[in-house]
Amino acid sequence: MNGTRNITAPARAAVAVEGDHSALIHDARQASRAFAAALTPAPGADATDNLLLVVSELVTNSLRHGGGRYTLALAADPDCMTVSVSDPSAELPHERTPDLGGIGGGFGWHMVNHLADRVTIVANPGSGKTVHARLLR
Picture 1 (spheres, rainbow, N blue to C red):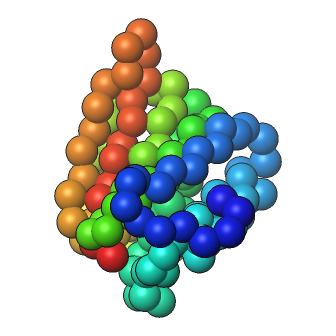
Picture 2: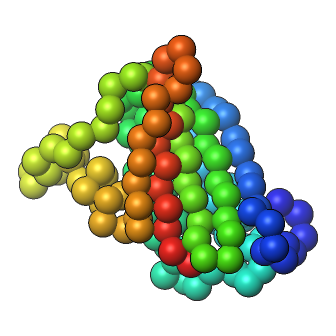
Picture 3: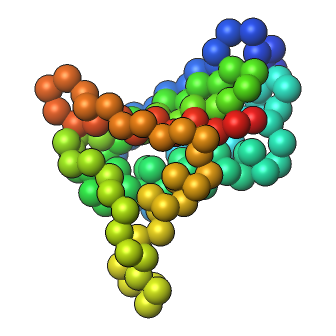
């Protein structure tokens, strides 16, 4: 992700991690911020914020419900950015009633589906899944 990129072919970045959850979420956000900043033209502030929120939510879900580790892949073309988060769990994400008491969560999957132009889930060979979220630039 060094330098400036001219978007004629898809730009890509990927990272696979496991460890302390809060640090991993922070690292995923930082990698995503750097990825967006390296794109030419750079996405607008709102598109970058949406990218960071979707990354945070998908990574958090993978860490909490997907086996404690994930692989994050980012791609971009002139029209959109795609976040792909893989984890070893075959359990599919699902909507939950948000916990308004602030203890149990339930907001992330709603947020991802609201911010993304398209969300798809693909079963990985062997085990696990990958969630792809496409965001308009």
